[in-house]
Image (cartoon, rainbow, N blue to C red):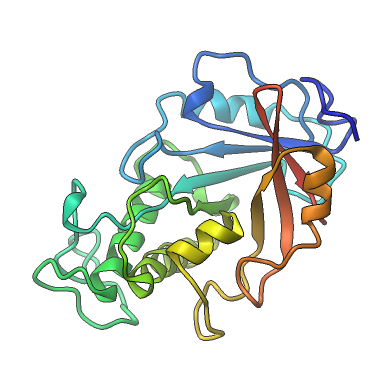
Length: 245
């Protein structure tokens, strides 16, 4: 398959993902589906042109795939005390007690209990303070990349993502994981069947061509119980997404 040009997305059943790097720039024309980044590169931030990018995605009228016409993705991290905020309890927001599978978060501990609460809180913020209307209507992809801050403790990193997943599931939203096999292995490692991440769909990064992205649909998912439903490649300055379903 030749590299697509802007405007060829619908014809080739390819979607595009966009975020803060596309602010005030030309956007892909006529994608089959759109995935919009909610943050400004860090888990604690808001994409300054989120509203504009959502309007672009919601204008999609032709979607020959089984992907949602509009989905969202959020940055993830485990910054610990180096971040701008770290939880000190199992409450978020302040008046709401969260059921924490790792026990009690206290004293700014960086162990899994507080890491879980950090993830839960970041997902809450993504849903409710960044300008998303009807957050339960979307599929939320968790963007897991080594470019963000992570602990050397893979169990704590996994707890962050489990906290995010539990929050999104609590509002009735679907969740998936975006990463490459290498980055996922470095950050999270193996995932057992007891984790809520185990069956989540995978969106695989790393392909350089449309042919490579198609082939990556046959790769192993990021978690043993999941399925590869989406793969990504970059062409002519745009991120393209190939539907595996």
